[in-house]
Image (tube, helix red, strand yellow):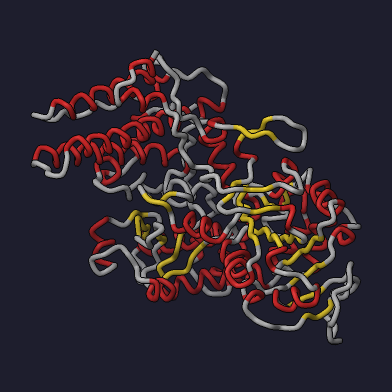
Length: 569
């Protein structure tokens, strides 16, 4: 199997990533359809991993005149080397093993990948209604669905829009993109934005855009004003957009490398139309229902969760943008033919996010024929199926206060933001990548040591600046530049384990990503799966906990840097 070594990672990283001053560059992207290597192979295959075979600890620079700074650097070097020499274990283990929680289901301890994290106070005891989205919330899909969407859109580009037939040879690459990117509609670039809307990195097809081109493209600043951001960028925030990102990159890459002149905006619009056709035409939905075993990941605990909420006196709502025939087929597969008996309200074709801002009336859907009826709706009958409508009408008809509702969905902006902002609804984001990233961290010794090194270097960086005081000499600046470059280099190695092209969906270089910032702002709770609800009481009280990426304060190696010799004993 491929060996997980720093040399492997660094040799595959661009010059900017190996020696940049600010965290934006990462590994050069593979050609279309080329799979990225798994940096956690050795650990996942169960072989013993010797840290000395994996990575070599950094050799830190020295200050030419400041002995106190050098003492901090010496102790920092010792704290890092002690881990690589196996004298002590890295205190910063993957988040899933850094801490545990005791579930209410059976009293057993669970890893943090099964935890529900909180950005705000939420008391389930005061919640009367629990609502759910359908796609990627109640029902999740494997990579096969993204591949099918990609192929359908690719076929439409070639056959209906007369794109080059060579594109038919391409296939979906699940290792290419991450959620939370944005498409620059003018340039056709895939961009990664920080919480402050800085374009941290971008790709033209499968080629990374240089910092110089980024600087020139955005008028000397990588920060995009809000008014221009809405006009120029299309966010790719839901999981259905993964195929979209890959297909766009492949098409642009083909045109660039073959020298075919093209208008980026037209290509972007065509790809978006092709992807949209797979959804609007129903072709994707029919493919799923024709082979539910292939596409739908069976949720073994979903029925028990819904029944437990219902037996506790809470009402259940299902509000989905998908059509009834599709939702019905999937729910019969994962719950059973009687699935509608669990829900007080079933709304399909809701048209979110407009569902939260308009005041449209509801229409009834025939559960037998799927026909939309014309009669006015004044009451929502339990067991009935309805379409269109609005949250305003839903709350009015059911005589429910928004503050008594918890709604869970996978899309931050389609499902959650307006519900929370306009109606005070408690929101829960289903972010599958929380578990996926934690699993990669657990399976990679490289991530563990790179994370430890980055953490210790960052802490030492702060201590050194405190020691330097208010005025900085040329030697001070040179040392800080070297340390900052070292921190960025190790952060890139760490991010490479998560995704060789873009890193974590929660980070953008050395900053919080736009996606993560939006999640913190609009989601009161977040978790990797709806099934994690089974570990909690229906009366659970959640309080802000810092999230899954929070770092513990009781790190003994950091205490060693400031003089506690017992930390390495």
